Amino acid sequence: MRNIKLDGAMWIALTLTVAVASGCGEPGQVKVYPVKGKITFDGKAMVGGGAISFVPTAGQSGKTAGGEIKSDGTYELRTYKDGDGSMTGEFRVVISQVVAKEPPKTNDGEAPAAATSAVSEADHIPAIYSDHQNSPLTTKVEPKPANVIDFNLQRSAGPPPQTGAG
Image 1 (cartoon, rainbow, N blue to C red):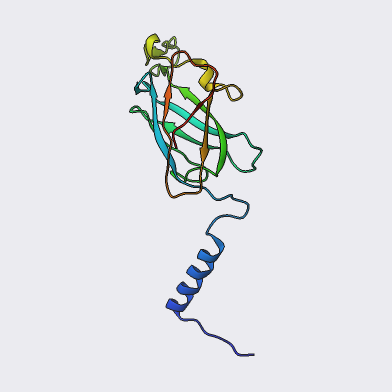
Image 2: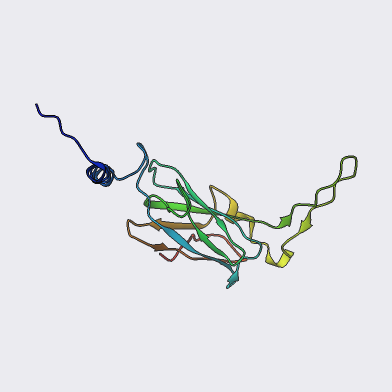
């Protein structure tokens, strides 16, 4: 048997070939696809920002994807790292809204300040959207380079389920 010596360039090429062939993911990680979109409430960007998560409904195994909803209503999902997206499949969509700001810090011995409202009552989304089992929002993530999925939340949320535009 012959010993093979690899110079720096050959070693890098071999490492990249192995990484590409193995998919570069950690063992046990499912493949994910980019997902982003915009959350509106009665046609306007959801006020206050918040959080969004895609909860699997078809029994697929893998990690639930989630993301921050920014003040302009946009979001981008993350499963393993920022912006990587979600596994494929069908999901119940859970949306939580930030409606109060944390009170300012107080010095030791001072009474804590009260939280302040960040969102007017008129701009609060219905609580049903943050219910992991009963949110009327559902969507599907497909194995494609970009899934753009927008949701328009309604004041009168309820059945039938609303499906995100993919």
